[in-house]
Length: 234
Image (cartoon, rainbow, N blue to C red):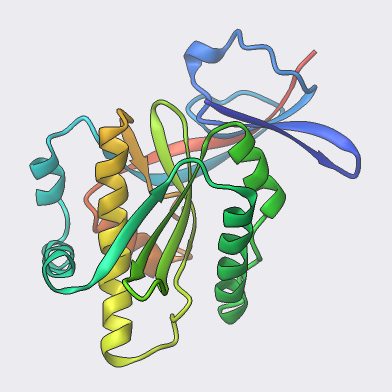
């Protein structure tokens, strides 16, 4: 479970990620709490969500075999022919978080997405549950960057950005391979860390984001139903 405390209009509230039945007796420090990706329905308001999850307790070769064949080809090609370095940072500094947010916000602006929540990333980092990862050229130019959160059971994708999204030709193809290779790199790092699950950070219920959903499902994970709940603590 990941728990952070935030304020909105000076009202304190808790955000709890990956709430489960064995946490039912847990006492929250805030009266108002949001349970995000909860396995149980608890609270005044309950909304169903959906995500794609890979079970990391499988053998590496079994996980890889379940990837779409084109993904396996691109990941193997990335390893063999692309001069791309992978980085996994479990103790980012505030400066590194700021750098990631600037990168992501430029990306988000180009495709009309909301900008990153920098304050929330600081809070995740303070609770030792933030990872920043990137695929970069040996010229130190980042092709793809991800922000993930984790506890001792699950690693979950929070933000994904590629600065050169509008590029064409060989560079665009390189970015596509690098993004898949970065996900695979994260899966292996999470497995080494002893995590049980790699979570792609949600898919739509009614197919509103079909292309992105299919991209995530092509990694061979299972689709899970979970819940976002509003819970009061008395």
